Length: 448
Image (cartoon, rainbow, N blue to C red; front, side, top):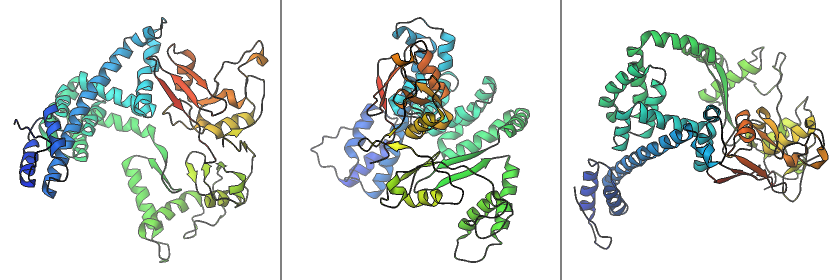
């Protein structure tokens, strides 16, 4: 279809609707994108805007398909060890691949978590190398990126030949499916193509069972467990049964189920209905909250920080702080910058107080985009500690310390292309990548 629309020409709603509807059947291109932008907006009827929405989605998939090819090329470039050459130093290519420095720079450039960037790179390389038919559907805008990602994710357990067989079945059906339907069909096809492997994988996955904890907004959080499906079903029945014992006190069924789960886990003696009251048999727990003193005493109502979660309300902080058995540790904040400050030890290993200070100050790994909680990180010297003359520099003081997850600690210490400095006044860490780009990471400010 060849249509040219000049911006000053008044196109009627009916004509614009007709052209937009026609675009739904056209392969995305620079020309169709320009026409889409020209036609979208107030010229369209409600029906036309739905067509425009679908056409925009096709063009997004087309652009993501081209981005996938760029990402795959970045991954291949890193695998070749070429970025070590950019840094001007010889380096062990095997170790370079182990560190996967490309994912760290992609994380910085796209402002993604390191794990998410690594996943994006892996998906791109898998699509280009193993699933060309799926990639072609994405570039034609016939499927979404989430569908293409699902193919690489779920088929990763298969041998290449078997994965190719599954893809052959999927490419015929996937353009007509939603993302959830795509994943469901993929699971069925994988079980069909490799039933013995599916059974073995399930037995192995049982060893990976775990609890999960995800922060939510407004002082809430999601807590659960990854379990074999049958155990999860049993737990659901147990929660329902316990919730049924609660009085009709105005709580919804969903609220009762959440309270029942808390009661079963925390109040081991199983006292129903009053989850806020301590009871005999309650499991011991350690909860760390960082809160300004004026907020703690009620002079202000700013947020506090709950370790492992993030901002909580002043009321939540006070409730935790004044609960029976609470232990307080004092940390001092700078009134001007709002950053935490503390002491000046000259030993290589930071004292427990200094380590707590750095962890509470930064909260997460100091690498840009990394969200590994600081309490699970190494405490690293930004400027290396001078073992011969400690007073000469690289002191074990908070201004020269930062939490780094093990991955980024090794990257900073051993990779030839990555460098980091830290501004002692603002706490901002500036990372320079092998390609020469600079990425900044600022610690949280407790007084804003």
